[in-house]
Amino acid sequence: MKAKLYYGSTCKEKKEYKEVRSPYDGRVVSSFGVCDATDAKAILEIAHHAALHVKQIPLHQRTNWLLDVAQKLERERERIALCITDEVGKPIAFSRVEVDRCIETIKLSANAILHVNGETFDTTAMPSGKKSLAFYKREPVGVVLAITPFNFPLNLVAHKIAPALVAGNAVILKPTSQAPRTAYELVKLFIESPYASKDALSLIYSGEGVNETLITSEIPRVISFTGSVGVGREIMQKAGIKKVALELGGNAATYIDVSADVALAAKRCAVGAFINSGQVCISLQRIYVHESIYESFAQALVEETKRLHVGSPYDEKTFIGPMVNEAAVLKAKRWIQSAIDEGAKPLCGFTYNGLLCAPTIMADVNESMAIVCEEVFAPIVSLIKVRDYEEAKNKMNASDYGLQYSIFCNDLAMAQRAIDELEAGGIVINDIPTLRFDLQPYGGIKQSGVGKEGPYFALLDDYTQIKSVVIC
Ligand code: NAD
Image 1: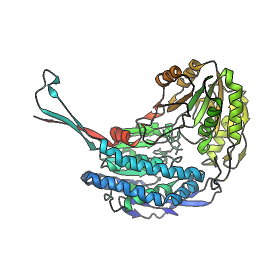
Image 2: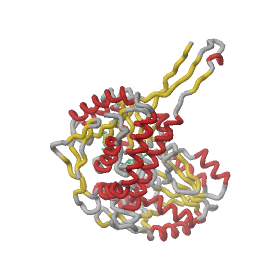
Image 3: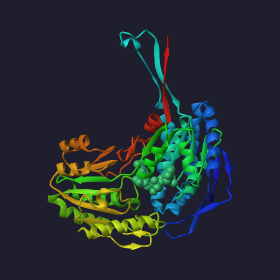
């Protein structure tokens, strides 16, 4: 099925289409119109003009727009879940969860905008202040450029376009080339809604000169990017004077204290490390375990991991489907082999069948191995024995990344210390760091990014700007 472009509300065909193949069985599952700088320039102009009228659309129409899309998405749940599974190989049960999350994200955005307001302040607080009516209001920023990754190809699109549109902006979406059809299906629902603002949303795909033209243009006032650190850095360097929000990679870790419920921790850690084949920015990659429970935890984790079904993403019981492409598998194999060469030991996994990778638990690792200190983005987790919380904290905080960390303990003082001391955008107590509720503020520090998503917080940080007013 072809994923076409949208020049604003106008659907466009292209001469050349690039095929997308299923990571599971290599079937052609979709194709996208190959774009170029001419498409990018035309779409930028359309968005520029649209931004002037989108902000005039009454707010009730914009919120109805989102609610209408959410309702239609509920009816299309199965078809769009299948689309995700076709394009990125996500197990079907989790693709359905992603559609459900996307519906929530859109509804949350419609609700969040109602809480984004200005406030008045008293200028006589300063001796030099003259009595006046001073306040600030929030306005849309104009044009937003949204660039999204492959691993949550529907919900991460919604996290950008829903709050940006409801705030009254025009949006240009450039989704991952691995899942153009998933993005197209969602954009189509937005554009065909009877409540749609004309030309407010455009859809463009990769091609010669597209990134450069979009990123360096003065027209977008905000670029909201989710993806790898390397691409994020490149965008930041090229963007010029405009706001750049970056949701980048992570290297999530947890600490299992001696006071923790070991069985619960092992069960949850198997989920956190291997869901979506480890292709989650908050995938659990490092598990620091108190030395006195290390052996029992390792055994329980191996048992829990062996229960996870690896196989066809179309099979209802599959937990781990294929990785996204061969390059990702080769990188995982290389990094595991290099760790083994330096003395690490696989406790389970380390077998492959095409792009299906068995979940791998590595022991006897050290902090300088790539599987420990880099983002692996594969079903690999490392177990590391520590003396106490203090050592685990120091090792977690030594990372270049800072997206989410967690701790399992039954010790309130330790939990409070973890909340204060762990250097990350989010901390979870007594569950995996792989936990995200779509309404929460979400985003990393250090190399993991700049800014926060979660509809309300993205509205404040990225999709509205403050205008200060004084009436004398
Ligand atoms: P990626 O960086 O390869 O690609 C992300 C997007 O950027 C894609 O749409 C791609 O087409 C586009 N892109 C690639 N090169 C570009 C360039 N030079 N200029 C502009 N756009 C360009 O990432 P990916 O492989 O799709 O996704 C995996 C990465 O995303 C991981 O590092 C993961 O941690 C990260 N991620 C982060 C979050 C978060 O919220 N922090 C969420 C999901 C994924």
